[in-house]
Length: 517
Ligand code: KIV
Ligand code: ZN
Image 1 (spheres, protein in one colour):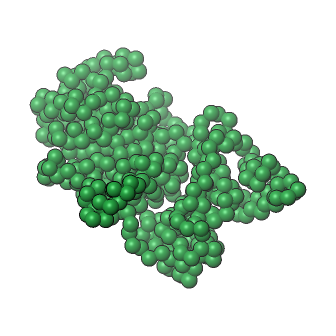
Image 2: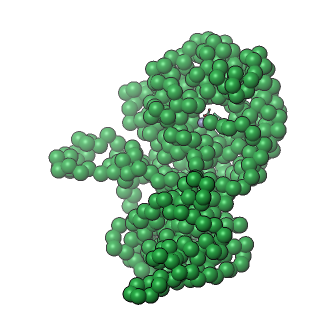
Image 3: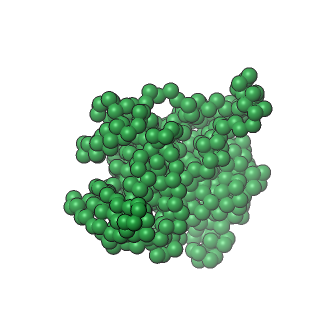
């Protein structure tokens, strides 16, 4: 392998999906995986096949349909996990990777696993060997590596490589490491693991102390050549290393990361970020580096003046290089179905005929209401459509009577398993009436903890997007998003989206009895 290349391993669909409320259905995962392929990530961790039928199916489908990146499935050092990952990855052939992991730190060994060091070493070797029977490409992770005694960690890593691991990942599972210390650990392993040159050193950092990106970059300087993380930094607890930051730091500071590069198509970054945000329901902060609304917005007059005179006075990156300010021609109501489909494919959406018909009908309605239909409008419409996976509820129609002395009343029709169900309900305002009608159909009862309305694109005719956080009685806040030029309809779509997500979260997870961090 070219030693100047830093491999980018995306775990949005595995660690990212562990983020509470971020569960995605198969179609949503597939759309994200396709976009990750356009972005040219090297490895996509598509799921944890043993954990549920849904995860198995997602890994299997992505392995069959997404070409380009290596497709990876996670497994504990347990035969049934490795077998499930091996089977799910079969369609990827040589491009399938099994990622086996086992905790190695003292606290995990003594309190979680209750296993002695020798047993850990034996399980690591057995797990890696078993995975090798399915694919040559095997990654091993000593979970909680950064809190493991370095001497023992070196033994574990050597055992994994001897058993055939081609990548050894050193996770900072609980986000405890500091940059200098983490870099020293990588250097220690390079100096103390006999066969370290036979494997790629990977890093996987969590953001509990806000150090995930800094730690990953420090490790790259110390010789790591694979970085794991997620776009938008979503993930377990405080999240994973934000890959857009890692990629752009390496690209923007060649003086520091001399000669190193990634294979990422950086102009696809913003599109990827928006797709993930839309489909996971997790919003990006306005001030977030690279991809936040304000990342390239200059408020002060002095800065604006400087930018006009020479962009580099206040911009260290060209926003166009990460996908901002593209000059795509917007579609209009006169654009045909073919033009819409081509644009959707360009945005990463590959829809069925039925979905195209439904998005096209909404596209035409939107075209009648506003002059231009922008890419963001289309992503919102198509996002609604892929969220309406089989088994999920979909909003078919909504009529609301309100204002004056009339009791606000909503008439809602939802489709479910191919059948339409209509219910009318009064409420305390139009949105409340729509939610109550939806509750009656779905048997759910949600409490709105957050309600946010935003314009997707600019102008008075913008498509409005509603983001909700809903508690369905178990204290977990589930995010839902919906878009329409009508705010009440956008709210109803967002509420149905939250209900579908909560149903997805209730699907049984099998096989794994220990918590995974
Ligand atoms: O954070 C972690 O340790 C993980 C492993 C499974 C790699 O996600
Ligand atoms: Zn992790």
